[in-house]
Length: 459
Image (cartoon, rainbow, N blue to C red; front, side):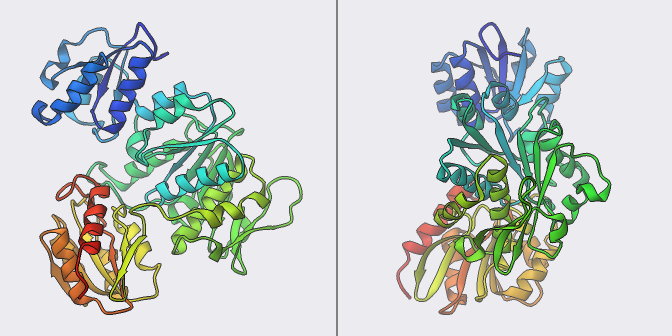
């Protein structure tokens, strides 16, 4: 597949990445068709935009009429085992993901970052470290900026940092990052996967095509990932392994914390440990973010950045929007937007990041995840809990000691949290769920939270 003129390609799903693929392929002279399961009236504006580019919209009922397709490109939000995709596969049409197309069109080496939580922060920080050290770096993927835009624009001497989800990895064929990073693995998206094992296997596809000439970076503190370590006897990772830890096993780690400093044990040359930065040099709160910083630093080192050039990049990086982002203080209460925390593990990490009482706002569209551990941590660390959305009852059912209030809107949730908080507390929006029951996106949810806070009168 050259993804060029003379080929006939179907784009499945007209979300952000689907539209990006369509635009790039049309620019390369491909005959592009597009399909989406949403009602036509709901996406009428998008259909008009793609038709203005020369693509043709096909109603789902008419997909069987398409003949001579070279392949189909699947948007990450469309399930691989859904009836529409199965119908296309039955016709022996190969189905690729957007990141597969991006990889085949990309001239620059790729750093692919995945994990259950922390992907966006780590990808953004990796790009920042590379740029601070004087390298050209482009960041895209699940972070919200379609990878294909960055891939086609990057010159060979650049680096492309890709945040990739399990959904995007499902349909790769030859996707082959020079450096792969797996941050952690915990239960998530079990509304899409039949089992935890299936979810894990989707994540592991990020290093499936790597060879001994590539680099793999893993979290030694993660019980699932640690089984991949070369000392465990597992041989699935063929790439050179670099591991990080905040724990005690520095013998098997390439980067670890020693005396409050991120410490690097070089894999080549002088083996003496090198202090990269102090933990407090980073503005990112929480132990999980110490791990994210180490992962990004190892990725930058693997890409050729000198250890001495990392500290300034770590110090100058600011928290991303909707990821433990402080948005203001009202009457002595700090408000933190962590709307991108869409699984229980991310919320647990956030709760453990603060040494002040927390009033937590959580809930949304559930993903068949278990809230048992989250409930236990809420009872340990939260002053109060405000629940919203479809998962409100399920989350509340796992909390036994912490006071709970329910709210029907974000504004109501903020008012309830304010009534429960005291000066010196933190009101934390960290939902543990998807946003689509009440909001357009996680970003929209975070913005509604900020609007409710900053627009509220002082009490």
